[in-house]
Image 1 (spheres, rainbow, N blue to C red):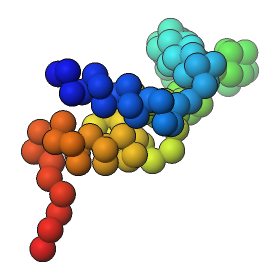
Image 2 (image 1 turned 60 degrees about the vertical axis):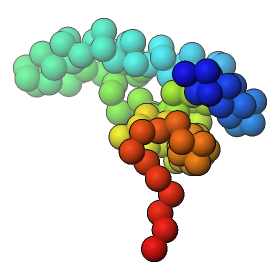
Image 3 (image 1 turned 180 degrees about the horizontal axis):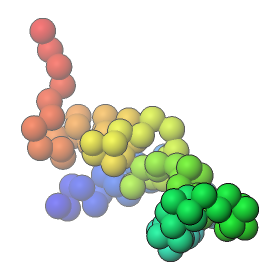
Length: 104
């Protein structure tokens, strides 16, 4: 556990997203969840004018996956929830169980 904390600090110092970008993404996730049922009801009713009156960030299409450690938006691996850069460093240090470097 101590290694994971140390490595995550090491990674976060190298490649980090701005806090404002990460906060914006959290806000979008929260708003999307908040309006999910209302959105579903409007779609089933066919009320597209009512759908347009919802906030833009209430749409789940606007969500973007980000690395849980660094907030990096590109190179995201869904299985692990982290970016490829973070994954590679953690895998090389043996912090991800069952993952080994390929050799043949």
